[in-house]
Amino acid sequence: MLAIDAIDTFYGETQALFGVSLAVGAGEVLALLGANGAGKTTLLRSILGLTRPRRGEIRFRDRAITRRPTHEIARAGVGWVPDDRRLCPTLTVAKNLSLGMKATGFRRWTMDEVTELFSPLKYLMAREAETLSGGEMQMVAIARALLGAPGLVLFDEPSQGLAPKIVGDVMAVIARMRGEGIAAIVVEQNPDVALAVADRVVVLARGQVAWAGTPAELAADPALRRQLLGGLQ
Ligand SMILES: Nc1ncnc2c1ncn2[C@@H]1O[C@H](COP(=O)(O)OP(=O)(O)O)[C@@H](O)[C@H]1O
Ligand SMILES: [Mg+2]
Image (tube, rainbow, N blue to C red; front, top):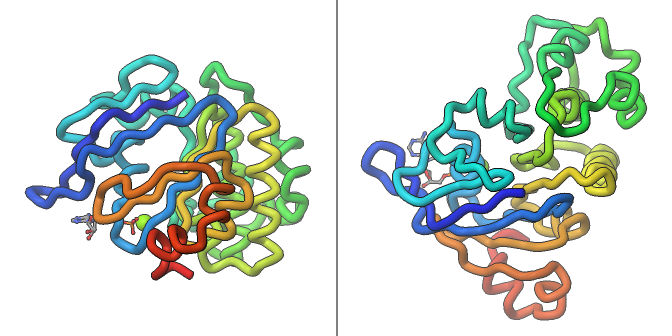
């Protein structure tokens, strides 16, 4: 679904990613872990064309998207659930959701399906987005991504600031999406949350891939886990 080959990404003259490579298969969930400042958000921004890599290549469904504009990458079927949700604050939930609708060639989720996934949405449709709680905003952001018919969804710290019950709901939705064949990259600072739903794991450190493997390999090796994620537990 997605193949990233040796990308270098910069902010001005400051290099944030150094030769990062990874791949995500169809319907696969990749946990992307790493300390604050490791480059996780920059990797998602690189995929979306928001901060274009200076070197290297990114392919989505075997098509190079490295230097395509963001709207084209979204239309190809890459969905985004940003760390700050990015809802339009003065628009209603219904309007925010309808703004996310588009056709990509992947399955298009209906409004009924997303309100079934997150039942509170039904009662929030007429509310202005700025009046929602953090958990409610996250539901809207995920529902909006699904209405955009994605083949791959990039989640940037989806559990951050949410109550444990909502984190459980969000992770259940990611698992359900995988069941529907949608791939995901789940960026997390809380490794336990991401490892519970992930098929594979990539750990970033100082803009480089520090380790890649399976959740089981990481769980079976406490010393490795401490070495990679020590500061995160
Ligand atoms: N807009 C920006 N301008 C300059 N440097 C940035 C910008 N955003 C992030 N960085 C730097 O890039 C590095 C990676 O940041 P980021 O991708 O946000 O890390 P993470 O998401 O893993 O916390 C950090 O050193 C950070 O300071
Ligand atoms: Mg980040």
